[in-house]
Image (tube, rainbow, N blue to C red; front, side, top):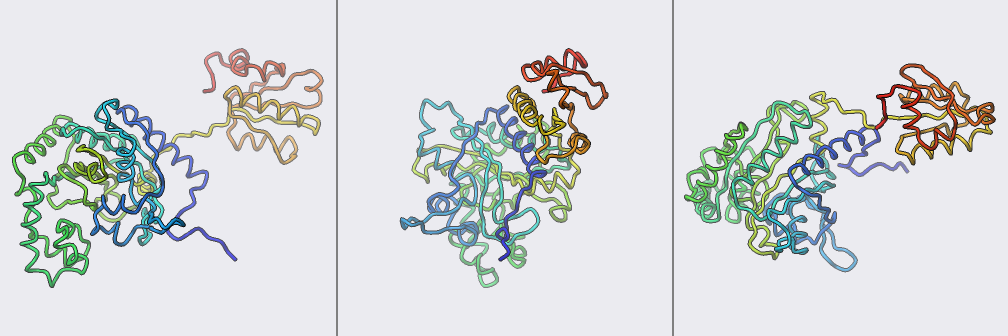
Length: 435
């Protein structure tokens, strides 16, 4: 039997994993600069956590969730997105308490699961980086989250970014718009797709998000949410726009943007990139918005929130397509060459001592001749080689060679194992140290 990975999943091999690690560590450092701290939630949750927050008419709930009954008869689901689990953790662990300064800012990274047709940059198991901030209703926090998303993508070296924003207003504005949309769509009921017929009276805003060609044609003339905003909603959105202007972050208002999940309110946004690697024209790479009311839905107090999510697979495709240079993060400091079987114990002791002192070190494990070992050191771009044979064993010294300059010196074994930094400073360039 031939074993293969499940459809819609991918093996991330060592060379690619180095790139993923770089992206994740870059994100961690940037988020810490903005004072966001990591949170880790379970990979599966009670089904209701996602169905209640995402909306029972969303594609995520109706078509894409991996759900199952466990052995205890509990209805569970693999997480299809990160926000709901973070909100559940926020409520369950009472992070809204007075001992937690507001806003409470967190970020997450991990696998998500959706049963959909696999395609470039879109898998059934995919990886997401996201942030959430709770406890402030101020437009300034909306703009901080947007600015952080833009900042992150620029840190990754991506160019030709486009920020699109919209508002869904508060509940009062949304209810007024919801009715106007129903009134507009009802005369076209028979022309709508089956999915949109179901959504029309449950959540008509989702019809605007339909991918069906007939639906798209119908909603072209639909009323705009911007015409139904009350004064508070207008004031919030105007403040967001003025703050983006103050930070010199260009944006485009897209009144048709509604996002795919039901929990959004007020500011929503998408950061797009123009790259053929994900199709023609601009494609969304990072998206999010405000979700006032979501904490209450999961049993918490009234507590506003805002966040965004970023797909790792799509990001990696874009970085490759734009020829982003990844730094070398696996530098080999020292390769230890042993000449003769009798040196095996000493070479093992040396590499372990070097590793204990913070150096990356390796040696031969295939019983190869010295020439083959030196070739390996060259291929791995080792900065130094340490060579030990019978004569070196007797003299209790080893030959240390700096590969870039070719300079080679005999150094006492005790000096090498005790403080190799000092060896470098003493025998080679005074200003050269290995981090």
